Length: 238
Image 1 (tube, helix red, strand yellow):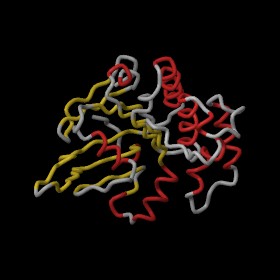
Image 2 (cartoon, one colour; image 1 turned 120 degrees about the vertical axis):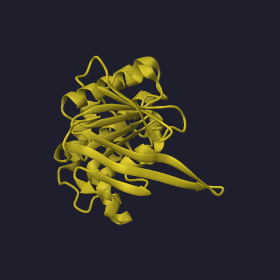
Image 3 (spheres, rainbow, N blue to C red; image 1 turned 135 degrees about the vertical axis):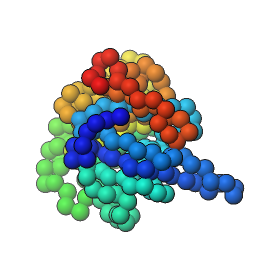
């Protein structure tokens, strides 16, 4: 388990359970889960189908709420926030990268990167400058006017990565981010994650592929909504 103190934690869960009523039976997707993800750490979250990976990611992403226990993001107790406050928190402190990219087809590359800032009450004045700089960083400065359908899968995922960074998030959540990519393109995306980690970004990567999980600094493996195993990869200090 991470030894980061609460002050240093990017995300902290204390005795968290998430229970879904199904056909008269309560299914515990997370069961008394306690864990702390430290600032600047790169975690792979692994486990079989039904292990609790998606539920954990949804809670960390402020998309789902805990049934019991507490969840804090960068020291802020998320359990106490209403839906509007959660939406604002997502736009300020979280970056999302999805397997299916989740780009808006009607928007071009620059506009898609800017989307998280649209939801902030007081978006930064340098938002477009940030977006252009990020597009250049991911190698898409010559594609700013293109729409998603005009891009390859790898290019679309690069847009998604730039979008996840435009709000300078506390935590980047990546859900099977290389699942729709060929091996060469997936390696390029993972190289970008390595760069972000080296710069101090906190990254949680959900994956079912061992070779992808091996790229992370540390691995958290789930089983039946509980922690099954925690270990550090040789490439990272643990």
